[in-house]
Image: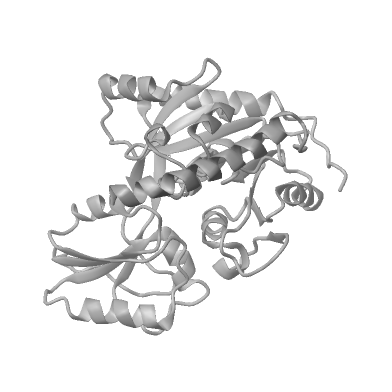
Length: 359
């Protein structure tokens, strides 16, 4: 395995160099970045995925929506539609992607739009919803065509970018040095208890620059929730076994959480943003039926629920006890006020002068 990785290093180096040249072109002005006259907050990562971008965007929505009118703009990864699409109550993951759909379902009062061209996407949002006074860019750290006013970089506590490498050797989309573009770095998926020694160790490892603030977040799980359209009910007694399936980049935090629900679990893993087929549902049903235990249930993620049950729960799963676990992120108490104040102060100091840019 090590020999195989060694052989891949030249390709990782070439990939990283190409991305470095692209970033240099933006830094020098050879490629243009559009700056908008309203607060634009970018949330992204250096890795290929799995750092928790969507729940962090949801955190920002909850933080800002009482005082402002934020809008979320995403590319809508793996959607079937093209161009600019704005979320409606009838949207599906095929229309806008599973993550934007999740956000629009949780916050129907918020404008959610998708467009591979973020400059065009923001422009159209401002034309259609002129009251918008904050733009939240989901998964846009490498999207240099828009110049954010505040850039948030996420990195997984268990897979820090400082210990990773560009693809195909590692999971990084660019060299680690790209982190210097961030204003805020959040260590995601940390434990609920955070020691000063751990904070110091990670601070020494990442070496944030003077202009960068370092924060830590963790996952908070909600109650088991039936799939939309399902009448599934939890067993009256303690759950004895769980069939867990998911199509996300990193399933390990959910595995650890499910241990608290049951002593026995079986797992089916699909690729990130997996589009489920009838064959997949047959596999899930068969493996569930083969669990020789009482009080058994099926659990998946909230993101998977968007792809499976909207607009309609599949017939093969309709009579099964399928639940998803909603999640939200929380900033650790010792960092929360500083983080919230930095976000609010940036937005407050940059609102009031927004205008629709020319197309």
